[in-house]
Image (cartoon, rainbow, N blue to C red; front, side):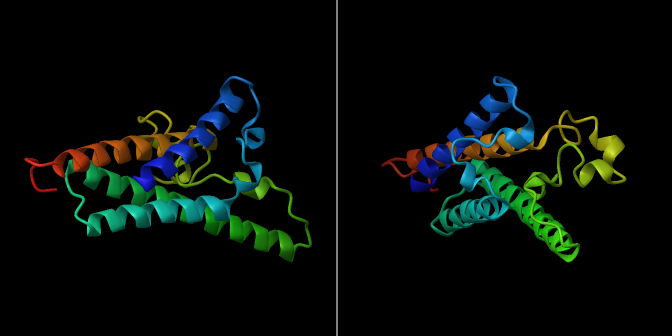
Length: 173
């Protein structure tokens, strides 16, 4: 249940960011949410890896079922996106340092695997992937809102099923 509450709090941050982007019409780089200091690649990578670890620990404790498997896959892919973003961030920061440039903050807004200008958009699969709305053309904040919304929905579905199965008369988890 701790993971559900923590991820719900994290999801609120993404809702605020989307409100800033879509309602207040702020540019993506300015839509930072409530906790601007926490909107950093290192924090996002650590959070996503922590969620993935939490899901893996729930699996070790017996969490199973279709929602749990979907959650595990989603959390692995989400963490992979953030590990990729963090690696790109470190790469760009190192290059800027090598060139004697100060950190500009733009390295926090690099594209990931999915979305506009992401790795997939420049891959040989781009034309095929463009058939899926947003996969290669969504702005980064939208991509991450979808990642987090999907993770929250799957987490709630898996937790609800698991809690229902843990009651007397429930099936094996």
